[in-house]
Length: 493
Image (cartoon, rainbow, N blue to C red):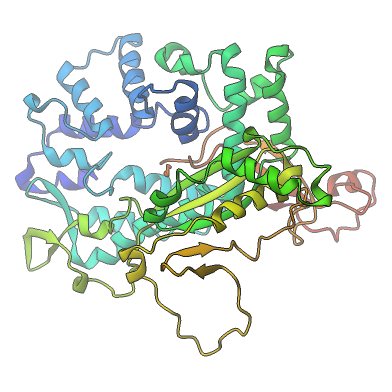
């Protein structure tokens, strides 16, 4: 991208500028720890509460360490420039760097940067998707600098929107998938259990140690024999055997609704309510008592990249008849089929003890039924009744309206189970034995959070292997000469 912009004659982009931007592009994710955003977004905040640290900080630290270790004599002004490009913020205004160069690697203005191009294409491929339709090269070629900001052709408004939509899609379908979130919580629990013995969280302050901290930390725990790591080993074993934490329920909320109920929906309240229900039914009296540690309340913010704002509104565009004047697009300048809401909160409840599935769900739904949601102006404005030619005659009790105009959610009827329900045998379509295996490269998929951050992927793969009625895998039947070639192929999820 910097090479393309350097063709714009009035910018005077030097070879030094290009070199620094290219270095920042190569180094900006160098500081990712094991399992990418899971490490800096979930593990570190719990292992070192109050400690302000993100992976970009580690990238800068490791960059400095690499220069010193390899005796690379880079001018201090260039080092500061590269570090600021990684952070996406000009922290050394006295150096008088070109402002638009800070919008290439980590764009804090509107989120369009080469980091996003890179991880969207990479992760779409890594999860087995079709060839990504992202028009990255077209956007790069239409980019030009106007008024110290990067702008794009008005013909590419839809392509810009599709970039943010693809980001949302990956977060929705992959990074925040309920199974991925369950695995993330298990990995974090394993790392926290091992941290007092292995001092994992301390390594972020020492680049000489941190450089060796990779996804292989799980295998190090798995190989260990020390009694201090027994809890962590058990969690890794559960990961390998697919005995994951279970997502018992989910609600999709407007961000304003999260603010209304976040203090009311807690692990403590769910456990208390579940135990109350447990004593009222004969089928659940023999169940274990639900503890706070059995319940995880997960609030995941899923958005198009700029929180609840329309990302198109933050991007500058120009027209071919006036390529030196940029402005923001108005609603009438782009398709009316673009969405009007750009963020949601996924409220999910997990249980660490699969046998408590039904009780934890019942406790959560009991709290939700007691919690009226006040309708927000924005949410009400964007809710419409679908005009479909065929209307269902079955009334599903998703929610009821209270006399005060608020809403009481009854819960998702598709996921409802009785309080005595003690775990699922899986989807009826996937009645097979499943084994969790690490990627050979031990490399992470994710590039951003949820929200990238979201955490989006942890470098573990799930292989579903067809089994015979007596539990043999296809490979075992082939080795014994009993497979007739009619078995289905190994299926990747």
